[in-house]
Length: 196
Image (tube, rainbow, N blue to C red):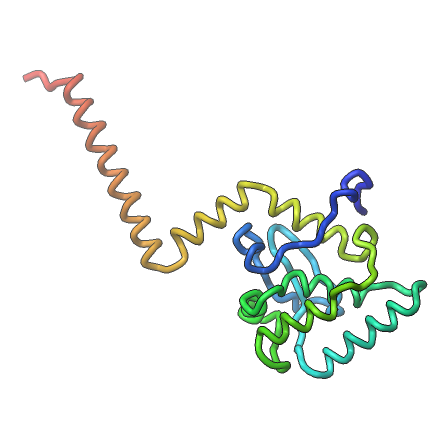
């Protein structure tokens, strides 16, 4: 459960593009029992695959309307839609989830999916401190605050984005190693000359 002292600082999570820059990796969760079974483990955000189409858009809107009208029921669908609206803020974010086979788009363009989740999840009543994804939000936000994860993700993006970038970084490392060895042997021979 959430530590009550930390729950005061609980906030929504960032879009997929910012999460990727912070080192979070996305993966489709094929073992999930429900589309609500979202997990965050070891830097991986595991989200069950969903086919986004007209049926699902109607389903989400109807379930959210029901949850908003009846305060005694859980707000799990509302929480899910708010989560997806956070993660998919732009068409680029939707593209990231589509690339990882989390979203199958039968709804329209990526921009339309992002707009749908933003519009439907806007101005809905749900308690950020008690919803079923509160621990996940806290875990993702703490992971993103860690400078090591952000720095490592930036390093990988800069030097390992393409095979050529990796090869050039490896060649530079080899040249640096050879130059260091040459300097060491030169200094060593100067201080320990051969007697002959």
